[in-house]
Amino acid sequence: MIQIYNSLSRKKELFEPIEKGKVKIYLCGPTVYNYIHIGNARSAVSFDTIRRYFEYKGFEVNYVSNFTDVDDKIIEAARELEVEAPELAEKFIEAFFEDTEALSVKKADHHPRVMDNIPEIIEFIEELIKKSYAYEIDGDVYYRTRKFADYGKLSGITIDELKAGASERLDEQVAKKADPVDFTLWKKAKDHEISWNSPWGEGRPGWHIECSAMACKYLGETIDIHAGGQDLSFPHHENEIAQTEALTGKKFANYWMHNGFVTMADEKMSKSLGNFKLVKDLRKEYDPQVLRFFLATAHYRRPLSYSELAIQDAENNLRQIKTAFSNAYHRLNASHLSDKVKEDPKILDEWHEKVLDFEMAMDDDFQAQNGMTVVYEMIRILNRSLEKEEISGKVLEEMLDSLSEILSIFGLESLYVSEELLDEEINLLIQEREEARSRKDFNRADEIRDILKEKGIILEDTPQGIRWKRESNE
Image (spheres, rainbow, N blue to C red):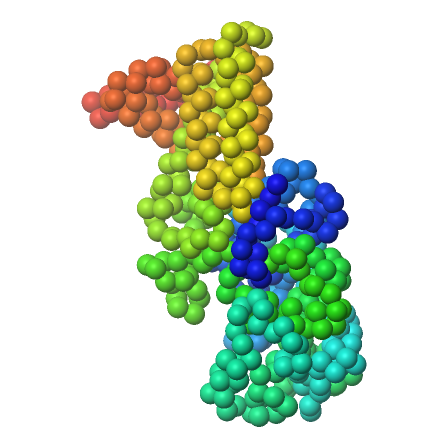
């Protein structure tokens, strides 16, 4: 049974879905005014991994992740580039999909956009006004924060702390409010800004109301899991709870999940600090599968430190996994294995025990790093079985199938490609062969030689070292 750390209760809780066998997840998506950096990508990858694990466990997942496509940052960026806000948003939505697809992030079942849901947002605000939770002043609409008795239950921030913070701001917007702690639901349009007609005049939604309206529209008034980066806990998620529960009178989300930051030199990665790495640039330097491995195999709640060394470690670990797959498939394809071997029951018992260990790790709040420790143990079992030639074809196929299914949870697919090897793959195999020979692991060196030979790669010893060429088909 799956245990989830609930940010609302600040403890792990047994996951009990609203509807048996089904999970409704809402992930706060990006504000699309720029390309995403590796820190932004962590949220998409972390919750894609969690979504995949739910599916692995047999759940039917309804997964919704929005785009904030109208916002102060978008309007400002569009003005600087001398384009319309919708055009800018569309450009970066396409860029987001390019980056996340490269990282093997599956598209959500729904990707709602704010601009497509303005009527629902206006209706939501109208209902809050009717319930006296909101009020209009000169074309702006505000939420009565004090009226919601449970305000602060997610973040732990009190009304008094909010008031102290508001007292430090003396801008015109604060002065207009009935109470300095109230937050904006609808913004009156400024000159030459994108806007929509509403009962309060031309304007556009505030940030927080957008997700409340879209989550309710696509998933219902109460959802299983609401997710996002830990920086969204306050004020965004706190305000979502206040306005949604005020409207519906029901609990908004049963479980709140927040992923940790990606850091550089112990600082949170952010565009404002200038310490960030864009995914589109990293994809030119590294295999996107390595980037996915780096992001997906750490525990989602822990800070994750980005460095070239960390990426190199991920690359090395992924190479070990790919090598094991290559060896195993080579054995399957290159020889006729027995249908039954004496050691089969022993190997399968050990293997099935490891599968259970993996699930136990992931059931404990999706402890990906512990799950990967088990995966490495499974790789060792696979390699040991291949070295001793004590495994049947049937058992080998079962092991590969189950290991492939487990690794697909982390977005790691196509770990073995039977087509022609790429130059980079050949060089990596030759390097590994040389390392095996230097440590006198001649069995492994011979295996790599056989793999290369099967692929038509001829090795030549020269005074400058090993050289290779492709065998001519003529």
